[in-house]
Length: 374
Image 1 (cartoon, one colour):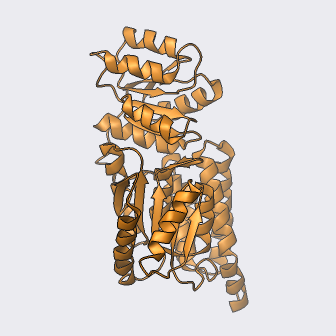
Image 2: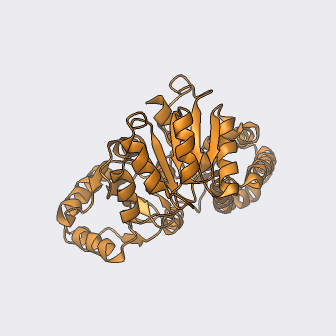
Image 3: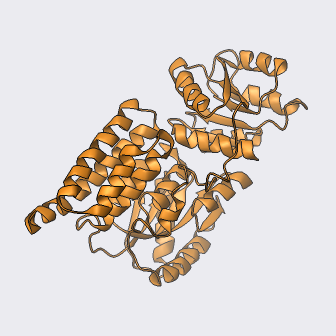
């Protein structure tokens, strides 16, 4: 193969990376065809890389082809990191900037103005959704990221994971949360957050913190981390790195979970995913049936939708927390109701965790395992 062939291959990597990331998101949302397409794309990449004697990419692509379902995303993240390290187009020579990920446009502008007031002239970008943030993260480098935990199109923890383990950015991430929950705080710090601050925040103190983190960043080299480095040592992390290796992972086999969900397709998909992990899953189609089942049997954990016929999830949660026998049972709310008021109400009523729909099945499994371990 000629140098021209290698150049063409290198220049095509940005498009390939974008395609893989799109497929990874589809796979997490339960799209069965995405898994097959990821393996097909990895196979095609293997053949291309073989012809160019790019052995590291060959090995990483083959690892994706052979990966089991539970490790597919981790292997794919390693491959895309390696591809990005060899790509001339995904890392343009731009000054690293500051990214503010915040739904409230007025609040985001207040953050930006306070940062500029610290005589910081780094470029500032604002994203009002996780999708906008992902698009910006693919286009340019960032040194500091302000990440609102609650966004209209998803959970900030999923994006935090992607920033640290898929985009492999060395950026400092400040998580801004309206919810004072120790478990959420610990998970964010394990996912790589530099700071976890409660809303409302003092914008001037926040700007001062950004200035300190920028000085710290100046001492680091802005680069994507290639496979085989410290980032790759997190290889066994499964979407939310609470469980760092096989020895630390909790055995969930046989533990019984109550799934309360009125939408049949969503219920079947969630039940299938959890059953594959060795869990026993009992399904209740509404809040009334859920309370009847809770009287009849003991459950290690409850996954609870909010918008349901007969009894809504908030009412069910109130009953659970008033019952001495059920008070200590972990309850994960899984809901499309994503306003700050809804989420705060859920935690105030005693929810152990709150996951927004649409959610990643792998993400949910990681949360379930973490709670069962505790």
